Length: 188
Image 1 (spheres, rainbow, N blue to C red):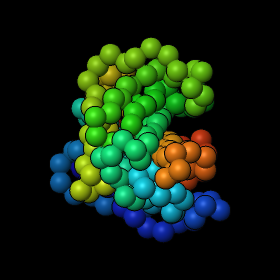
Image 2 (spheres, rainbow, N blue to C red):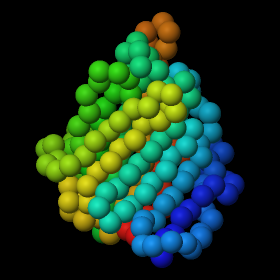
Image 3 (cartoon, rainbow, N blue to C red):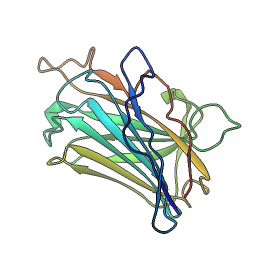
């Protein structure tokens, strides 16, 4: 049995966040999926347009689509993808930090909440971030083993970029509201 969630407009915040929730059944056991559309907040690669979360039996996949994601480092586009895997502990346990342009690095870290002061050791295990500039997408794949087996997961995302004058003031976009996580997505 496969459960998939797709886009249906539901207002969640003053920022006009719309959430996709249409449940359907089909095929073999696979994964639970959750999709979120986000309003236009910034420009040139730092604006999140939508995010999809798939919690599969082997991997968790987070795919975000952006406006004008470009390979040029001058965009300064980068982000943080927060993963919460423990209902009993407020906030995320993991954060992927990286640039969203060609030649950039990224790293999955343990964290205790959202503040960068709480970032800890690098996570051991299989994970990969890929950038698709044609589709304007960032894709994160993290193995269930690296997450300690995430029966449920929820996500928050924060991105930022650089203005043409070189400053980054005002070019921060959160998926929905600041430090707000998606609903829980069960492993399918």
